[in-house]
Amino acid sequence: MKKIIVCDNMHNEVFNILNKADGIEVIDATSNTKEELASMLENADVAITRSPTPVNEAFLKNAKNIKAVVRAGVGVDNVDIDASSKQGVIIMNVPTANTIAAVELTMTHILSAARELPAINQQLKYENIWDRKSWYGVELKGKKLGVIGFGHIGSRVATRAKAFEMDIVAFDPYIAPSKVTSLDMTYTTNFDDILDCDFITIHTPKTKETINMITKDEIAKMKDGVRVINVARGGLLNENDLYDGLKSGKIKFAGIDVFNEEPCPNHKLFELPNVNVSPHLGANTLESQKRIAQQAADAAIQAAKGINYPNALNLPIKEDEIPEMVKPFIELTQKLGFLAAQTNKGMVKKIELCVDGEISKYANSLITFALVGALKESLGENINYVNAKFLAKDKDIEVKINTKEVSSSYKNLVSIKLATPQKSVTISGTIYDEEIQRIVKIDNFVLDVEPKGKMIIFKNKDIPGVVAKVSTILANNNINIADFRLGRGKDDALAVVVVDDNISKEIMNEVESLDFCIWASYVSI
Ligand code: 3PG
Image (cartoon, rainbow, N blue to C red; front, top):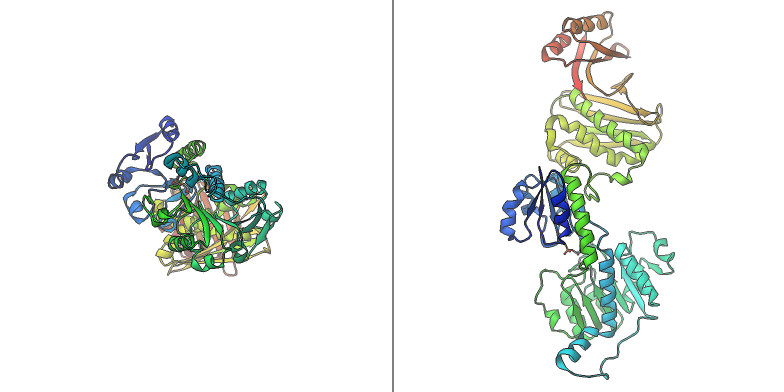
């Protein structure tokens, strides 16, 4: 049974789905304290979390067996992705299930900031004052809306605001400008253009780059009477500077859903009449919570069973982004790494991946698979696609990538050179006809053999009788030879003997002690 722990409160659909899944045991930690959660994490294979549970060093230390974490929401600012990767933990999120909820809350805040509705409601309903003189809001029509971050949420806020006849100015250095201009909106790379807007709304993740993106300096450059909305993350807009801006009247109104520290039941901003606040409700609609719960549960089940990792954030290459032609090279690269490590046993000092041909564009992704293959021999199950680079670094292994766009002899060629203090071995392979894998070179010896099954690889002086003597040793030990491939150099040669049965240490000793043998290795894949 695989164990999935649900750490935070969420829509009951998560339990409906998890409880029905075969081979899954559910641990419900939603009503437990954080101290209790710490000990409950120990046996879990997968955790589902929301923003109240940070996935940090302490969490990872307690979650000794955890293979994956599903962040049931978008924001991963409370997830230490590097520490997770180091521990081999795959992090997934549910990136789009709450988009509309966040978009509509933003629109609610924009409209409320224009008309100050919550304060009016408060006055009439709770103070019984019928006042029609004090409340002159502004119209959205014809106003400029500055949208910072034009992703799923920001872009949809922009299209809705455009329906209100606002002029949209978008700032997002990570998108193609046409994404904005094709909607008849203005794209800018100059942040001052945003500060010149009547309304400003933030839709970026919280990163080192975005924290404090609006402070007193930016506020000073804003239009007098600007209205500012933050439904993204606390800390993007400096809270103290926002307070001063609101108090002085420079900022006419703010709508704030997120805070530096959450939960945040008290804050000096709450004393001000010109701010509307909500307690981080961006994702809180019934529809979005149900969608998040469904998608989080499905992802957790797939991850627990090792089937798939939807929306994984720390895998080397996303499954759905891998072009078909690259897929066979992923497998080949891992096999070449595995073979190189078995051929050249010992403390790995350097791994060099050379990728020639069209496939060279993917060298940065392939290196992970080369490392997993090469280090599997020494690290076993401890190495995976998430932690491979970290473990190589930890072990002081020099990792190099070389690429050539044009491969001279083959359309595409992947080579792995693995060096130990004793020697270095290079194994090269290619793919024929889109799926036939072949080792085409070992060191400088050209040959052609499928990377499959049990093989003896040996280098020898090129003298008569080599094949006969090796075959005799194998025949004497009742080992059937399935294939015998040779590559020749100037004075020496290299052979790959594919065999049907396991080769014992004793048989290898016999082969190694033949006087023409320079080195011999037994590999199996
Ligand atoms: C998110 O990042 O998805 C939202 O901020 C909501 O997060 P929460 O529902 O986990 O608090």
